[in-house]
Length: 92
Image (cartoon, rainbow, N blue to C red; front, side, top):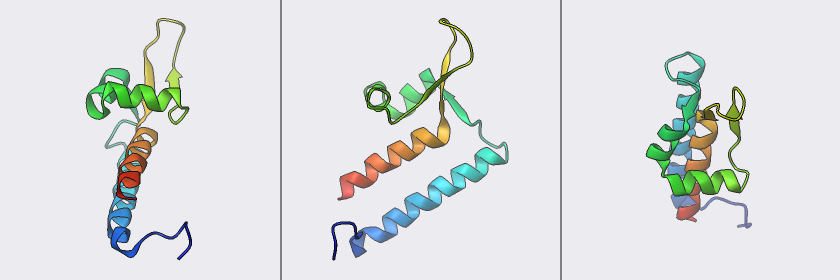
């Protein structure tokens, strides 16, 4: 077994996470979910500390539609993927 192999007992969880992310992408593409989260919603769902950490490490891209006072938004699929990756790392 190489260092890049997924242990057999973790494979079902990893496949479930992959299926969740694929389902999320379908919901976004079909318009059932908005593709972006507002800052307040991201903080509420994932925790302010985590979101700010992910942004500071460059794992999330902040998008702004206007100038200095414009609200920023986060790609829903991007933040969900980062959160799921964090979850998967806890299993390793």
